[in-house]
Image 1 (tube, helix red, strand yellow):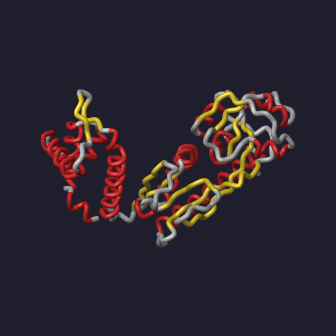
Image 2 (cartoon, rainbow, N blue to C red; image 1 turned 90 degrees about the vertical axis):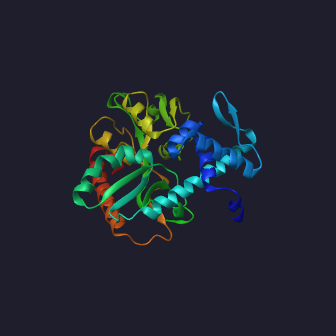
Image 3 (tube, rainbow, N blue to C red; image 1 turned 135 degrees about the vertical axis):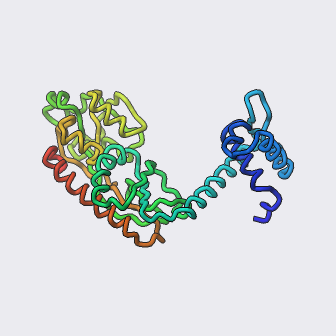
Length: 305
């Protein structure tokens, strides 16, 4: 890293801010210095590197094409520095940071957080809704909840719930159905990012390879659920995403069985993570919540029993 001695860190910060924000003024506001100071830092850094990084245009500071890779790596490096500072400053052991796939957070977890807070008022939750699996050494996340097969290099996984799927639709749509094959005549709402296909279920009911009529394809499972509730088609859904809607009659599962996909919900932690009391409390609470919810779901939709 001796080459870093040739360039001032403040200059690199200025370059990264200008590239990300697109103007000297925006960068100056973020860095808390004058526009002139940012401009001088950028010029000095370009001189130290021996190459131009920006083109000065009427639209602002535009990165030159040959600097794209440089600026991308610089931005990534600044993010790592920022994460390191956050991690170093974190002293509040009562804060529990959980990274959760957005659809699980929105459709299941967020409605139950109040119960956890009532049981453990001394623990504050920070929910990071994303499905990335960032290097454990570069984040302050205490616990992750992910869907997969349970194998993530550098992490240890603990199964919470095996994923099972079945077709769901509105009660009105279900009235027209007499046998599983009737579902083929209905339009489908498709999750374009799903890790399974309709054939997982169709093969179980003797309809393997049957043609699927897709009305809409979404890049987010939550949108598929909304479309299904709006009567736009049938969705192949799993337990946690549609538990509330099935229990309240907004959707029904006209035919079983609910079929295993080979995937599951897992607690995911770093291989080197130390045992944490707050993490263990959350895990025990969530497991109990899911067990109780699945019992209620089995009564409302017997195909998931």
